[in-house]
Length: 523
Image (cartoon, rainbow, N blue to C red; front, side, top):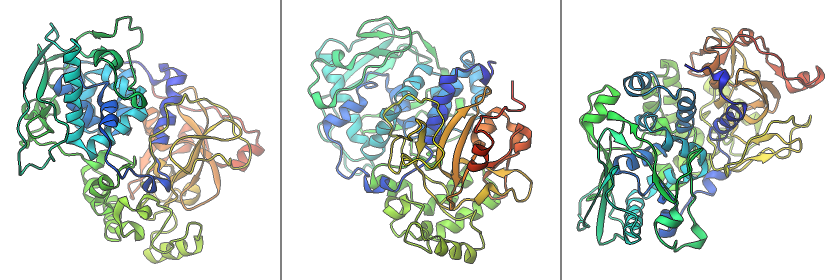
């Protein structure tokens, strides 16, 4: 198995940047949340790159797009483990904590890679799918009808296409009936249910003349591809990994229970699919109605129980659920819920004294307030990450809204939420420094070590003091023995096992501002 050390520096840096970027939220997120439904043009632009996928793979990509952070992690895993397929892949996925929809795509790495390469598109696709599932599927059918009219949708040795009259609208279904449904519905299936030939095509060609010049879709192709405007990649021996399904009669996605159970080694009976916010991580929902459905802090305890966190962590989150998200009355979709800076004791950002009093009353201290699962938009425009050193003072370019801003020194800086954290990363019981990415804000990548770890400048939530160090989630993947989980559910780093120590930014600058050498690595 290839070592993470062998992954290219560029890939490591981009992935590290992305993981940080989509793990945080800014106060502007709720205010800029999509209110009006997406138009037909916007939906067709989003689904165009995958509308000609076989139905099962299409549904799998739509489901997985709602978990962008995990897609990034899975893509990195797939790139580092290209030779793991079949039964070995099934075994490997039992050890991962990603959502089953994300695990499934490791069997079709081409699709996973496209989603990883087009991050902004992926999150927009997932947001649209959660907010307007039936409308998104209707957009798929309109595009398939155009591809048929252009002579580009037909039976091939790789796929079977079936054209039937569109079903009449049905009442009493949970999925709303879409508008703009074409006269016919096209289904696409692989000729061999265990093999998937992923189509590679230029949406600007296969659908005929594109009718929306302001919403042109992108054209993605794998590295080294030399085909034309429409072709198929080599077969992906997916087996039971692709278990998704689409019910065109009800305009919703579902589950092939037999395949799902086989690949995931479980025994579910419900063929319905529903989004699981536990796997959304800290990525915000852009649509207010979706945020209200899935981002309600009252669901936090059940989500954490699903993820298997410690009892203490679950108790902590349950308290937060009872407090309605640290003083927010509107749930995750409200401005207060989207901005963890606003606490129950203080409606004014920057009122540290009030926040401290509230923390003392709750007995949690400054480092363990509710609402620390800060969120941040993945919506950067696929920028290439670079590495440089920031200037000494806090950069005025630190992002306070979705996207990436550059400090004067050129480093990518990430705005974040300041919900409670632990100042100075105090170790507490069990040793180590609390270094969970969720407890930090205003994170700036300073550089990378040879073993793939990033070295960052950051502040702990609830504090403006600047430190330099590592992120526990990254250390856990490279040097797992240097990471422990605290009784509150957050990760701590045993810095001594890395040959490092947690320093303030001022101390680091005074000592020359050099990226230090690291200790042990995992081969």
